[in-house]
Image (tube, rainbow over all chains, first blue to last red; front, side, top):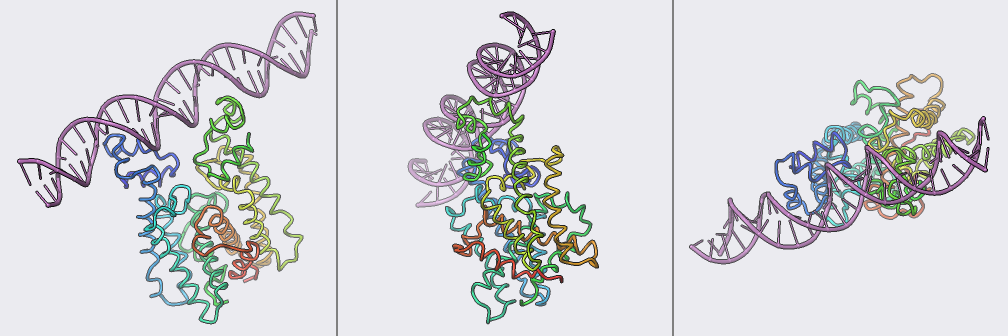
Length: 184
Length: 184
DNA sequence: AGGCGACACTTGACAGTATCAAGTATTTTC
DNA sequence: GAAAATACTTGATACTGTCAAGTGTCGCCT
């Protein structure tokens, strides 16, 4: 049932998603989903949870890589996740669809994902860096990755810059332009 | 009428927007908007048009600034626009809400906005830069700005990194971390 | 002056939607 | 084997976008 919803979202976006249609696709009555997910919002929350769990998994263990490659790998993985799980990704960062405030578990797992970024920013900037610098660096990496992912999945990037032949190479070349790999 | 719709969107997001509610707020019958904007999609297209027009206006003339300040100013203006016109911004980059393919005028004005980024990237990298480098640099700036704007307007940025006291200073400090101001 | 056509809007109807409420099996648990 | 939780079901309500056809009102042309 979740699977059906995610599939729909990845193709048509989250907005047109019909609770009833999902039920029909799963071959049950129109109230069956309402029993599992309390709300229409509930189904998005469930998707976001699953998504963030996978997301953290994709980002974790980046520390095992060679240091010079970590920032680019992080960027690459972030974008990869968005493209490969666009159904989940489209929901995860939409505050209007899944309100994290009401779901502590979701909040916790999202924190984990951000934690990866912060620890990475800390490692790159070294022990001497100020809290503000680390915060700024982590935000910069997040914003770059998130912007790229968003523009690729939903936005008009390919419309504007033309078809992208090799996504991995492209993402890396974009990352190189920002020298986020360097200490300062 | 557009005003009412934009106000609603800036507060509640574009998804819950009800054609009928907008009409009621404007004190007309439920079919009056349908006369002005052919579609529910039509109202989003109108908002996107208005938005991109303002957007280009906000980004233009960044060339007049001192060269070292251009990249940061561009970033700052991009984010400013998103925050100050969040009602428009939330619609402009949602391909599912306003399909640009069917609106050449909208497409043209969006091209203008991207043109500012490209010309800026070209100027920074100098005449010797390859097309791929310029493309990558323009994308990097766009992604950073867009990601930051998105995370600020819709995303969980402030939830994760804490309240931002001075937005302008923060945006600039994030921009500094990426050295997008430098040639390479 | 009189008519005419564009425009701005209205009422009415239809199918589809989320959601509330209350019912019915089936499965698990004690 | 009874009770309770689980997984559904049907029915009804209020709201939504959209189609269709009507009403008034203004400016303009003859």
